[in-house]
Length: 235
Image (cartoon, rainbow, N blue to C red):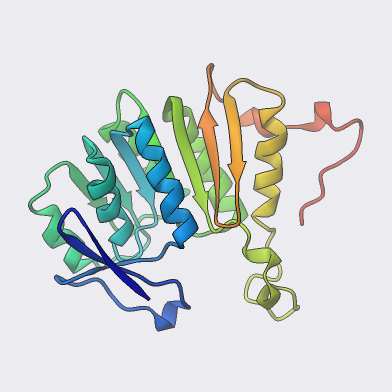
């Protein structure tokens, strides 16, 4: 665990298993990001994102960190949990540009509705740190990526879970579910076929898709026309 301050707020950087992490309180916000991830987000400051949406807030630490780091005009967070994050709600009381939603499944229509309501002119940065599951994450991308402005970024965290040692056996919790690595591959191939995706950056912690020119359509995920007659098999 590491402890640091940004903009007068204390953060506890905790990377361990969920049952080993603490909860955010009035003294410090829990932030579940590696050093590499934090450095990547710092690098995005040069793009000056002012309209930011996070899917999956955990203990609210990342939402507050984005607020301190980017000083956004509008910051919206959604999470599946139904019980509000007390520390985040207390922080939000003095920051009216922040909006939070609880009890929201990431791939349901409420996510799109919240984005349209708060970002009528587009989103600069989307961070998906929610289910980490292929189908739900892809569905969310299809909903929100069209709303990302040209030059904006769409980030998907923790995509590589299926390649970890603990996920290799038949008794692993997500043994029967397709890997998020499939989405990384699909997005990389898509980037070679359309200018709507300007670039795809991948490291061990996240995927970052930079929006290009043009209009994204869900049918762009149909890559059958560029696979030389072969098929993509889900990992």
